[in-house]
Amino acid sequence: MSHPQLTVASWNVQSGRGGDLAAAARVLDADVLGVQEVDDAQPRSGGADQTAVLAAATGAVWHRFAPTVSGTPGGAWRPVRAGDAGPRFGVSMLSRRPVLASRVLVLRGSPVPGLVVVPGVPVPVPLRDEPRVVLAADVDVDGTVVTVATAHLSFVPGWNVLQLRRALRWLALPGRPVVLLGDLNLPAPVVDLAARGWRRLSAGPTYPASNPKVALDHALVHGAGWGAAAQRAVTVDVGDHRPVVLQLEVLASPS
Image (cartoon, rainbow, N blue to C red):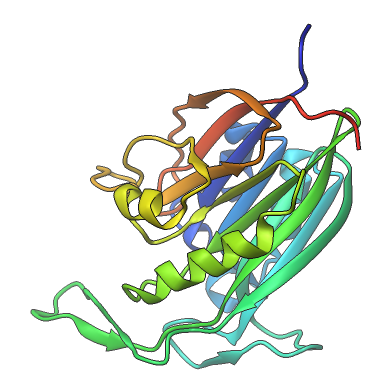
């Protein structure tokens, strides 16, 4: 008996830097695509609605942008408010499969600034942390409903672990197969410790894209509805992380 297949991907696009965003998205050929560091109406990316660009390129029947900040990260910004329509930044999800419902979990940014390495500066500099979100969608895969979520967690050590644990509690619905895709800003061994009860299917380093040394981008599954999984290596010229692309076998009975 054959089971439905679902191809999912996680991709940090770094505001579309490096190349042709639409062309790179087509290379991934994912049924459901979780995207991080997405711009909307930002001058630095030509004012584009990057979620709409990705949706058109991939043939998505559903898409949603979940902004985290208004303004420009690295410049002037504030946590996003309902009704904000100016320059925004956040995560997106796109699906070629029907989506029955979607929801967002808001995660506070770290109250303590993180330290980041800036090219040309000899010591790490403090950087204010942004709010984060988890965007989840209930996807119909040939009559079986699975939840696919994406997130981009804090770069502040420890705070990102707390965010991951909260996200996993929020996502782990009884009887529902769930997959979390995202740039978790955590190496694989830490993810494995923090995500007990979940399976990490992604393997191999993803950052930096030019010569990956560490796995920061992950795919985690929960529930008994997942069968075989195969990871496909994909290199694109957009973003500073390599995408994670997985073909999953869906075993759960129809909902």
